[in-house]
Structures are given as C-alpha cells and as structure tokens.
Image (cartoon, rainbow, N blue to C red; front, top):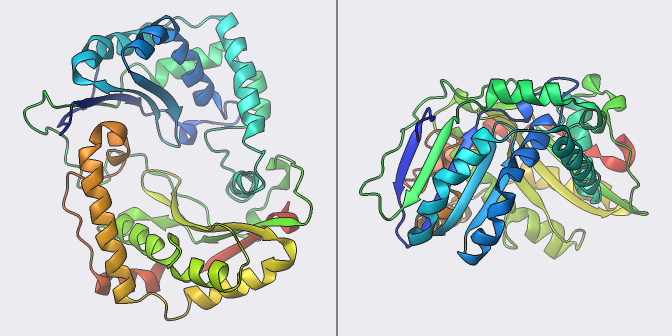
Length: 379
C-alpha cells in the first residue's frame, strides 16, 4: 500500500479477513459552513465502487464507509481466498475517484434524508441538540444549512487537504505471519481536542434543530464534566469498566433500581462518549413519561453517590470484559479499526489490566459532578 502513513498487519485466527483504511478528517476538523461535509464526501467516494457491488455480493464481501468524530473509514470483510483481489482495487477506486457536480447533488439529497432521520428518535434528537447547544459541536451528521450549501470546490479542497494519504491501513488475515502494529503508548500525534464543560452559560439555542416531542414523554441526559484521557494512564479502561458495572445489565445498580424496582424506564445508557481521541464525557441517558423524570433524577444521584460500586460487582464485570475481548480476538476482522483509534485501550491484542482499588479512586474523582438536561425543559 504505497500511499499509507501507518500500516498494521494483524493475524486473523479464522479464515475471515478484514481490510480497513482511514483518513484523519472527521467532524472535529470541520468549520462553520462545512459541518457535515466529511460525511457527504464519504458518501460521494463510496460511489467509486458501485459497479463492484454485484461482485461483492457474489463473493460474500461485506463493505462499509462511515464518518466518525476524528476519522473517515472504508472497510471490507470476507474470506481470505477472495478478499485479496478486492482490497487494492477498493483502495485505488476511492483514492482516484473523480467527483462531479451530478454525484455531489445526488449524495447531498441522500444525506439530507439521513440527517432528518437522525431526529426521528426523541432521545437521539436530544443527544444531538444537547451537544450543539452547549458545546457548539455538530457531530458527524453536521448542520443542515451547511449540508445544503457546501460547494463542489469546498468538497474538493477538503479532500485535497485530508484525503491525499490514509492515516491508517489495517490488514487482518490468517496469511499474516505475525502481528505488526504500532504500539501506541502516548497521545502524541492523536486528535487532541479540549471539550467544553456543559454549563448554562454556554447555551446557544439557535444551534438546536427543532423537533416534535412525543406527547407525554421526555428524554433525560446527565453528563459529567469533560474528561481529558491524557491525565492518567489507562483512564479510558477504568471509566469504561465502571460505566459497564453501574449500568450495562439488568443486575447493574441503575437497571436493578430504576427499571426493575421502580419500573420507570425500559432501557438505560451509561457510557463514555468520546468526542475526540483524547477527551469526552460520561453520559447517563434514558427516556420515560414526563411524570417520572423527577424521580429518575433523584434515583440517579442516590445511586451514583451511594455505596453501589462494590468490589464483587466490579470484578464480575471486568471478567465479562475479558471474555468479550477473547471473542473480539477471534472476530478481529470485524472491527479492528475501533481498537486503533486509541492508544493501548480495550485492545484485544493487549493484556487488559485494571483493579478495584484504582477503579474506586477513579470513581471518586470523575463520577461526582453532573449536568442534567431534560429535552422538554431545555429545547
């Protein structure tokens, strides 16, 4: 792969292979007037393989292209004996595709439909609006006005700046004799971004996309202070494992109390939302009848500041994470790119090491201050 900055060759333990190449452009690199342009460009470049899709189907090849906060990704998956004949071709097509005004307009219309679909869900709309209003960040889906007006010249300039050389290429195959990958032990060279604290003073209501709420329902999101993952070694693994312990299963404290005991919700999200490679927020999210929201707020604070984060519960979930990483090693071809977006964190090729004493310290430090947003009140 002659154009690549960093190539990783990984051994697949099965006959299934994966091929990924990415570009360092992404929503975090977009300025006002081009918010959503990388996602639109990704759609456009995917047209480069339209004539290959029947061949992909015949040969059992899966493909995808998607835009994240800090990168744009193109992927292939399939069996070793067939994927080889497509990987270089896929790469060359994307790299050399000529963008026309006709293709831009076709994909612009499609992306606009996808944009509106993002607001079909009340909780999704709340999530997008919350970060737009309080942090001025429009995520990969972008801003409707920018999508509607971004020009072919702008698209070509962004492509020239960010897409001339892939930032990472991954080849996952059982033909590889050894794992050769960059062991990333520091954040130097990664997409570093200082995220804003979510406070009332940052509020810009003109950033919101107005949506129709479901009558009688509200979405609640409770967001931590921004966290810089460079502050402490292994911080992401600790925050992630704590979130899983507190809110990822029916026996977790959030589910067992808010759902099973009180019957106030169907599902709960509790996770670290990574805005950039180096920073993000802890997010608690659920939706319920509006009459239940005050009680959910009360229970959240009772649980998060109570004695529910126990060693027995934590070590049980850490064991589950390790089993998941074993499964991920077997299925490495599927989503290896996820593990190379962050230095030595939650990587199935690296030993997973956490302990309860350190987790308790992290919990006391990073799980204390919260901003509460209810969509029917805020937007």
